[in-house]
Amino acid sequence: MRFTKMQGLGNDFVVVDGLTAPLELSAAQVRRIADRRLGVGCDQLLVIGAPVDAAADFRYEIYNADGSRAEQCGNGVRCIVRYLAQRGLTDRSGLVLEGDAGRVRARIEDDGAITVDMGVPRLEPREIPFTAEARAVTYPLAAGGREVAISAVSMGNPHAVLIVDDIERAPVAELGPALEAHPRFPRRTNVGFLQVVEPAYARLRVYERGAGETPACGSGACAAVVAGRLRGLLGERVTVRLPGGELVILWGGEGTPVWMTGPAVSVFEGQIEP
Image 1 (cartoon, rainbow, N blue to C red):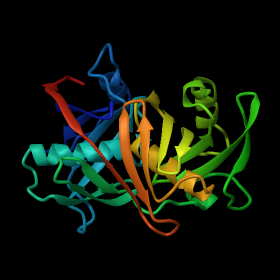
Image 2: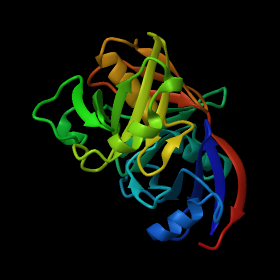
Image 3: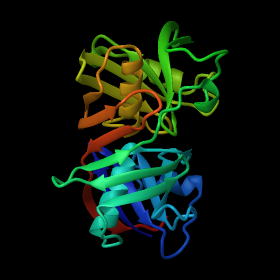
C-alpha cells in the first residue's frame, strides 16, 4: 500500500489514495500502520475515494490511531486538499469534499494556506450526541474525581470544551481520558482545554478521541471558538494557538458556518504491507 505522510501543525496523518481501487482496512491493520514503532506512525489515517454525493468532488474516510472511525478532522481535511493538489488530481483552488459528517468546502489561498468551511456547529444535545434534558451554554459534569463545567459542541464530531486559567497546568492527562469516555457522550468525545488570552487570541490543548493528546486539532479549535463565543469570551475572528502552531478561526454566530485557515504539509512518501 502506497501512502503519503502529512501533517497539519504537527497533527500527523497517513494519507492513502483509494480512488483507483477500493481500500478496506481492518481496525487491527489501522492500528499497525499508526503504530510509531511498528508501522508508519500517525494520529489518523485518511483514505481518499470517489464521492457518493454528486455535489462533491471527492470523498474521505478518517480512522483514529486506535482503529476506530472518526466523522471529521479539520487538520486532515486541509492535508487532503494539499494532497489532491500536489498529486495533480485536481486543478481547482476550491473543492467540495464529502465525509461521514457531510460536505465541507475548502480552498487554497494565495499564500498557500488552506481555508475550510467546517459547517454550522450543532448545539442541540441529541445532535452532538450528548445526554442532557435541555440545551445549555455549559453543563456540569463529574469526571476524574472533580466537578467541571463543559460546553458541548459538534463540528460533525463531538467536543467537550473546558475553560482553564493556564493551559500549561491544565489537567489534560487526568481529565482528557475521563471526559473522552464519559457516559453522557455515547460516542465518546474530543476534549478541549481552552485558555482565553483576549477576545481575538486563545490557547488550546486537545485530547482527541481515539488518539490521545495531539499537537493540534482543527475541529477542536473550531469547537473551542464556538464555546468561547457562546460564553461571551471570544470575538468573531480568533487566532488559536495550539502546541503545534496557530489556526485562524472565523465564526459569525449561531446558524452560520465556522471557517478555519491553516497550513498542511507533505512529509514523505512510502509503501507498507499492512
